[in-house]
Length: 297
Image 1 (cartoon, rainbow, N blue to C red):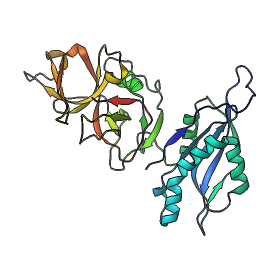
Image 2 (image 1 turned 120 degrees about the vertical axis):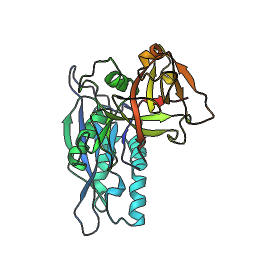
Image 3 (image 1 turned 90 degrees about the horizontal axis):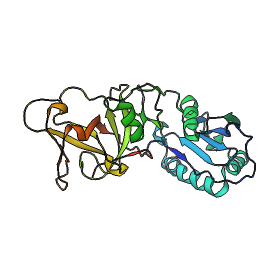
Image 4 (image 1 turned 180 degrees about the vertical axis):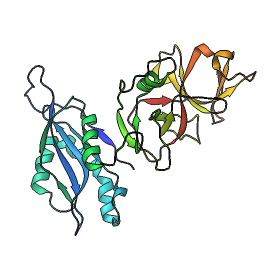
């Protein structure tokens, strides 16, 4: 499974509070793998907020290391959950202390450093990870952004202000090697069974915006206008033109939106009842997201 960012709840374990207006500070270390006869390899970043003692980390995928034996592979795959549990039980600072006292063989950590950051621990870990543990990171060349659906709808929706950099990615994930990327691509999570088997329930999916040319027969991310229930506001469906050959939704009385799973019914929406956000490209294999969801059903 590809490496993920796992932020922990800000459980207060210290009484000290930062001075008014002071920016959050954190301690961080490089987490390394040292295989017999080889040099230590940066494998991830561990960061501990100095006020809350909350641990945030990101690790590389074990597949990045060649010729792992079965035991080494099992250890690396169990590592994220092990770190999560120890961070919750002991607190982040105690965990770093214990690593500095005990790690010397397969796992090692670098020198502890201090950083002043914006308060978004996940984004800070991402930046450190790409700079140190995964230096091949190149936006829209090697990686794609993960957006919440609210951010994606604002950034890519039709007739919306599309200011570059206005809506920051929640994080970035590595894209498939054979996929040609563009600035309008992003990743979001799709839940529900209405588009199975093409889109399995819970899949991380790649979308592309804007949608140009004929929409007929394409799988589209749709925002339903006037829907106040966020869980029902966004859907992925096949766009099926009804009636004349006009391609624009503005020129059609209604558009049929069809599921791929025959257990679910199709439905019609008029042009003023929805807008197209993006087109489905493919499922991103193996990726697990904690981002905003696309509710299908």
